[in-house]
Length: 514
Image (cartoon, rainbow, N blue to C red):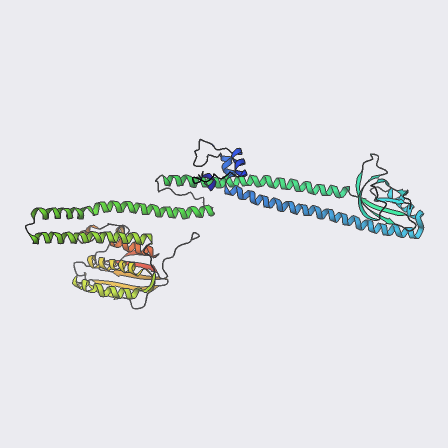
């Protein structure tokens, strides 16, 4: 739909804009079809083709090309005419010089004899000799334009030949030369051949331009109709999507043209929107399901305290339990808010920092907790690992991985070999990426569940007994996507190895060409 498709009402108090002459004529030639509806102005199929950008561009290029062709053909016709005129003048100049020489050698009688002989040849030039008083002596011209013989030099004139029985007049290019003794000699050439050639060139040019215009308009209709079909298909799909069916995708012909590239990028955007909407629905369902239980516990505990509490100690214990439950709910909502900010990019305040230093800091923070759980926390981050990103989010993501490893990374406190279970946190650089990994010796995650556990509120059966909301890995995955990286869950033989892969230079936003 173009801008002219929408009826724009001027603000109150301002006069309505007058339609242009082009729009008035368009509305007369292609009136609206009321059956289609006011949204698209209801123009017929023919009118819709004429109003497409492709057809308008075709007309512009056609006009430019036709003007260029007309100028080129006009120059060719003019140049052809000029060359014929130059050829005539050279021929006549040579002949006059020769005839003047004959006059100097043999006088007027010899010149008249030569001119009389030449004038009788078929297709001869034009000849005329007159006396000083203007009387004709000999030649093949019966009449001339007025005043031609009274002046010397070149001129174009009408004439009639003596042997022309029809008495028709023709055009000629003649030169008048004054001889000694007052005689005048006229030599010229008929211009009908020049005019015929000029007319042939002009006629050929006109037919060529007409053919170009016809073929150009036909080609414009073909191109506009083809483009319009594809745009209509895109419009139809867009209406389906606007109606609520997010599974619709724009058609791609496979020609890899601009419409295909636009369709591919829009389809990627639609896939992202569909995934976000699906995730939003799942989050809404999960919130309604998973948060109902703690809220119910809060209400029941408060009701029980009101019903059974016998003193200040009972009320204090009930309030402390309520506060603890409320803190857990707040942590859940904070995690949801952080995930939403990470996925929307609103938290992407980037800075340069050393990921290896960050890993060492987390090691010092979590080492007492790991030791309390009977685990050995090892830090492997010897060299610097410079990274551009959001330090707070990367820290939170890595903290979630370490916290999960401490919770679920111990096979009843010991490995099968009898040595204490280990958690290894690494930071290293590989090419243009920084790899932050956390490996444990626990039960790990089955390969079929690894894509599922990064979703919100997803908790495996064996982790139901541990405190948590099922949002830790979702936040890590969102942080990875925000930075243009990814989260990989691998088998550590035994246990799980979670790898956070982040580009060193920060997130890279692909261009449409990519």
